[in-house]
Image (cartoon, rainbow, N blue to C red):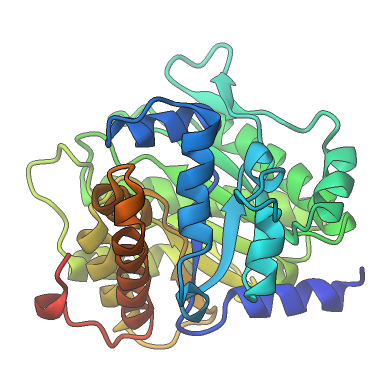
Length: 339
């Protein structure tokens, strides 16, 4: 695959009015989702929930891609159709999470580094045959006062992200790089902005150093928010101002696109913040969303693990994706959002 093919995939993923569903929970995390509706973490329950998501009528109007986990991209519907084929047939691009999670960063208490580079080139070849056309790697960045994160933590995670991105592009797969600044904490909006800006500046320095093609890459980043335990929650207008200021300082203009993670925000709050960012006008990059819990929780609440609620649950997904589509285009009205 040449670079133009990567650019075409990026353009399809960043189509106006569409977002990306992050359905890439590990089997263990999927079990925590199922606990919300009192279902045991069993293969059939995970399959049923994922099939409910991927077959929901009409979602192709609002979703350009879905990030899958290893077991999910190998999974099938009850009728035996591979999940990746179900999505591709609807014009939704299948993606794959390829990192293997975090481990403690030795010598740096409270900080972690993401692993998963071993054998990644071969895994990319297999994932390509399974239908994946983009991938994701997540770094975890924790704020703790004025001491965390350290530059050393930001740099090692940026190097891992850069190496992953280079391998992905060599395999004909669009890399999505995700430096997630964790929402949990009592840090201020200003501190979140400082950390996010620094993380992005270090990341793109390393990506350039390792010769990653920015036009064939998507950044998945946190919105800039005061911590969830901070005395004053950030307003959508504050989030938009801080987030866009951070992106302008940290992200080169030739990056293929930017999508925001929800990062523990309530579904409606994530939509309101996305809309506030869109209302700030055209930016150097196309901007959209790649939410996980903010899309899946309303679906789980409606489903409750019951076959009789499948249609209701799929309507909940369609509704939430539509609200995010309107928000991404600056057409959202919070007073009309039923949540």
